[in-house]
Image (cartoon, rainbow over all chains, first blue to last red; front, side, top):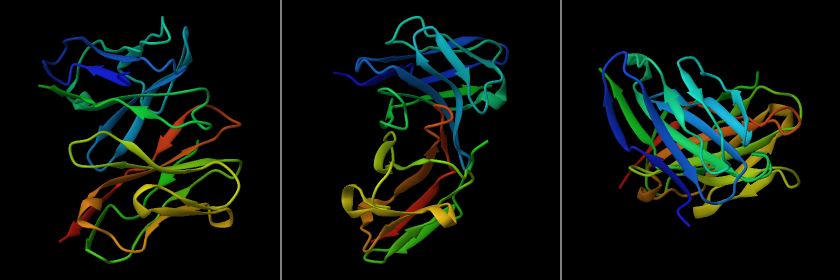
Length: 114
Length: 114
């Protein structure tokens, strides 16, 4: 039981490049979330999903896209990387509603855009 | 939209001192409240949570928090801190009757002097 697995752990991108951050969970959680963490700013919700085929915008969705084709996977895509997207990204999951259960976080992906 | 305010951005204490970290939220309806902790080099983990019932909740490692509905607050306390409590602490709120987002505060960085 690996929990929430994020890849890659580190990545450096050039401005304008695209990439996908992968997130997978093996706990059969139906809710999944993507957050970004910036120093002094806490965690900001980017996108979330309450089940396969359903996604919703969070607080800071611009510049990102997500998909949820399976219960296990919730990839986050950056289409045209910008320096403002330099951050640490955390994927999290929970069973049923996040209010009834707690978030399990991945180890994070540190992205630098130069 | 709901928001979470953590008033202390950086707290420095000596070992055995008492701790109180403030957290206020901005929604008047039913809320679920959380404190998460991020130890250096690790990912976020749940410290404690409030869903209903006794407003004084106890978490791991001797932490507790009190939900005061009239003050929209959920302050975190510990009577006597240890050097190993050095970490960043995040308050979070979820509105179970509204949507499935979990919104985090900006975090409080706690540094305990040995």
